Image 1 (tube, rainbow, N blue to C red):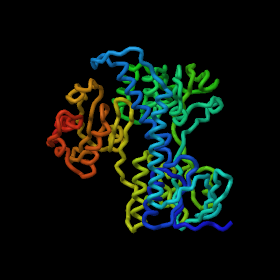
Image 2 (image 1 turned 90 degrees about the vertical axis):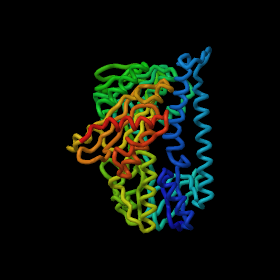
Image 3 (image 1 turned 45 degrees about the vertical axis):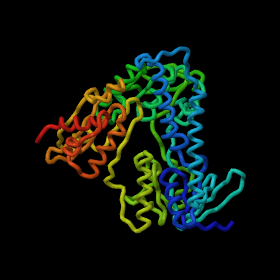
Image 4 (image 1 turned 90 degrees about the horizontal axis):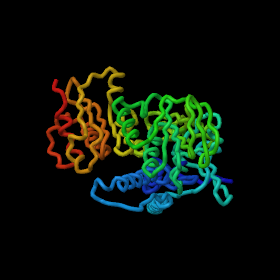
Length: 457
């Protein structure tokens, strides 16, 4: 079978891959994108947006549960998980429809099937109807993403644990959900299902939740979970799992915990296995990520890797920046991934958002800083929301007035962080935010208070 010739072949429809396909096709390049299952990749289907949809439903449930403090009486209300799922599915359907329009308008060809390399820059696609197509690209882009890891714990895989994918499809409420992992996914799902009404236990092998964050961040998360009735077991080693998730499951180690459902949320692994990378001349690192340079070029000529599979920080917004790096370089630019300012937001309620250095990183690097920190309760907007939990803090250089980093744990933390991120990117001094006239009453107004608390040199 003679290969079909394309200017660009993209394997996987993750954030960076789909935007590259749409952009290059709209410029007249013959472009094909191969996707095995999820139109648009994981973010609009099974990850970022669906999970935040469910998290918001859980927040609404929390409002109902505490409605009396807002002057609203209630009676005979209940959680309908089938309804929660229906809302999520409707959103996903809308997002997929938007993606299909983008393929049509851009001229990029969407090929639904399982793809693997059979020669350099040559991909065989096994279609759902049993047919096979062979696509050869002058340029090839890998955008295959990542998936939830299942740790090699005896009995864990046999217990058929939920991952975030299956958790988002539950139409009945778990009686007792055991969450393995105290990272982003585990924490967001733990709080959401507790608010829906499940008993929830979080197991974390480290000594504290979000153990890579500063101690005050971990302390705040532990207190939040304690207040919401979520059991947290830190420093727990797991030796064996028995039973079946969805029925009855037991986790055994230096403690024994029995539950009805088990969620594995201990990390992610790249989707780089069994797709013929070695045939294509594309090398991978020991952790399975594709080896790339600062321009996201792989070890194979005219082949790029973007997003999770390339070892970029596992965030959709970083994958989108990967798209911009490759796009601009293909147009003759000189963009690189090194030195990027990487923001993140944990969508618990309240949110945790951070950009730049935190205290742990600054100390590890020997960077001196001035610390400004205020409780969220001094931001008057929190009084109107009845959400005064949390804090903001910023690190400012001792040598000049540069902002080194920002952390917020509180309402709308992710939105407030964006203001500081812009200031850092523009190399504005902290005084620019301190002296700004910000709208009252907003959460961002707290930045004037925060930076006013910065110790003077």
